[in-house]
Image 1 (cartoon, rainbow, N blue to C red):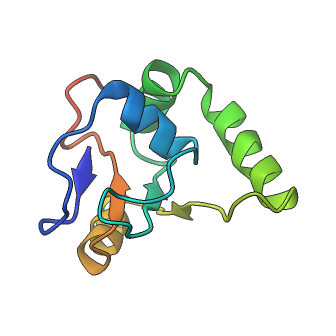
Image 2: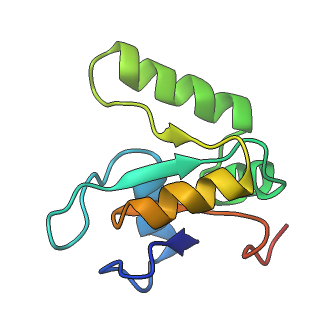
Length: 106
């Protein structure tokens, strides 16, 4: 996982991670809203969605679209490259993402 260098969060359990990326937890412990950054182009994306979220990449996209259209949530931010994901993380202290550069499982 990758967060802003000044993030209040230093560690997360697998359960907390799953709840964040499925929109069930919407704020950090200090009350700041969580900004999820997904990078479907990153090699870690399919591995992360299957092993951590128990969904295929396609199921995750459908899941988030349903949440948007039902008015339950806004979509995560989508990065088109690792560089863009890093830029989004650097510009938002509340952002969280994953990327193969830092991901042990891919």
